[in-house]
Length: 195
Image 1 (cartoon, one colour):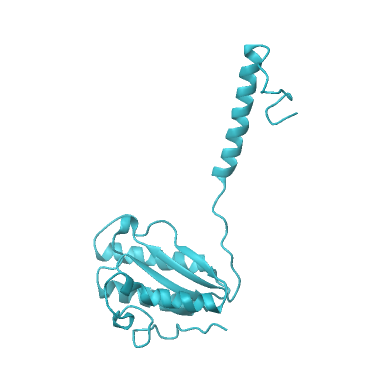
Image 2 (cartoon, rainbow, N blue to C red; image 1 turned 45 degrees about the vertical axis):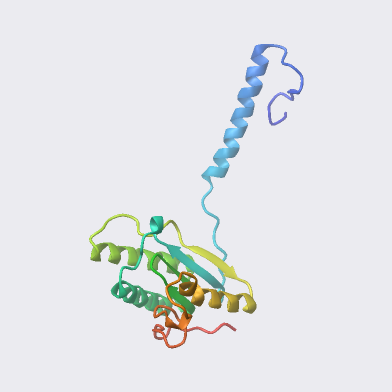
């Protein structure tokens, strides 16, 4: 039996109107089953192994700010420092912008998804309470790109640190106070080494 049922050749006209309707109906059912399988599938699991390095980022919904001031940023960094310590991860680089942030993070046994879920949920709750607002703060799930090698990591860290320069917020990357570039407020015990 073919996918369209009864082994019918649809390049030839149907013998009766009923044959044609049966073929069309069967075809539609097969199409809908295929779509349901595709739509019904959840997100693919992210690749996780101890020691993996990721470029993780999250953006504010509709481009809105996720940090209104330095108090928001300090609270975020405190949460990030605590989560990195608790999960035995290594924070290799970070940059907090107005409506998004970037991290280069090396995970241990705790998955990146778990770390990011706790970080984003905690920040959204605190931000919404502090600024008397409701609703989503972040645009969907965080983004994460697996870092393949040291050359990619070096380019990634440079990209993260140059983000405020590309956005026109500063002329030199070291002038942005909310990045891990040397001389900026790096969270205690959060630095990790990429071997």
